[in-house]
Length: 479
Image 1: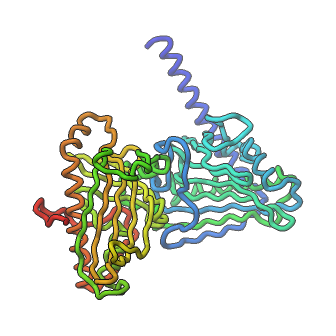
Image 2: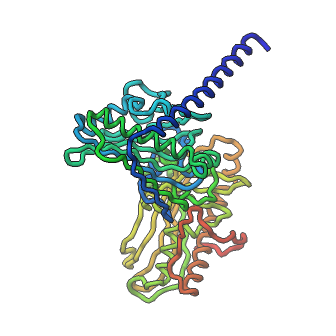
Image 3: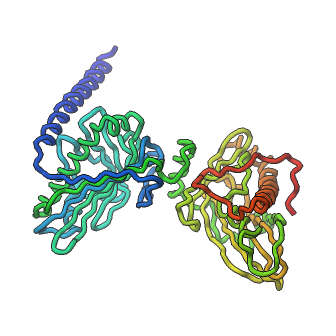
């Protein structure tokens, strides 16, 4: 071993020893201060079934692969709120938040946590800044500033943090008083952290002490005093796995889905105007004739309503070719979708974004049509560029019902030469097979819904669409 290697090893051992000593001293001091604290805390803990419908999993700028979302965590999703009412404050809400944002350590209990800035200028806080929160234990908590407003700032957890989610600090006036709040929405970063936080409750009590102290110090910084007790509310959602994505969604797919918010379209939408072979675009139209209804508006529980619901939930796609991951709770227009495409024995994660939703009655060639549908456009990293439209259509005058697919596409730039060659050889075949099987699948599902009296397809909160196995190559062609 060289002298340099010995020196590096000694330095590493010194850091480990210092971290161990700091953990013991910090934990002891935190325990002592917690035991002797005179601040009264009013606790409210409840368990709620279903998903947390409050704000969560909001966009985070910067490299998405570093972000540790709730879906990456373990255990139940917890929404925790710590609040203090400040009487006699000499600062406004914006001034208090600005003071804390410039130096979070002014309010943080030094024996429990210390904010060390790793990216960005000292003395300020802007979106994209990053901190390493030193904690009294064998871990530290990297975070990134996800949002900064005059009266709030929000931090998102990064890889390695003991929690997976976000935390927001905010202030607001309430009569003559000022209210300061800390609200986190997170799951434990791993099963080991969940054990420390949940059954052992060690991290829960240290965390309570940390944020109660933070609220006390916020009142002091504002130049006022805490009115009444500090309020600590914990809402536990055992059924919520974060992000509304199914528990079976792979970690790779979750990370890719989280990154879609930062991706742009991989083409200029203006190119779709007048698109055709002459301009390098392939235009396809496919349709499946569905059971007809009586002329007039769509019948309740009828063929058109069944088709509409299947279109809404992307349930016509063949899972051996493609599956979709999305958040059912998000508005359809603007929704991000991760399409898991199967190609040459590999799975490709392809991003798309819903561009428009159509719910209208229109006239085509002198015939009135009742239409419900939507379209998506491809994002950066997709193997294709373009737009696909899916519609459930009823001809009001005749009662005819159809499912229609309209696609405008061209091959996107593919860096990998093997994939590029493979897609060049088989891409067109896969395009046509997807449309053919989608039409066949739609006919089958609508017929089943009508036969069983279930005119409405259920989504059931599933984000990876559950559809039957692919048909044989001789499936009925779409006209």
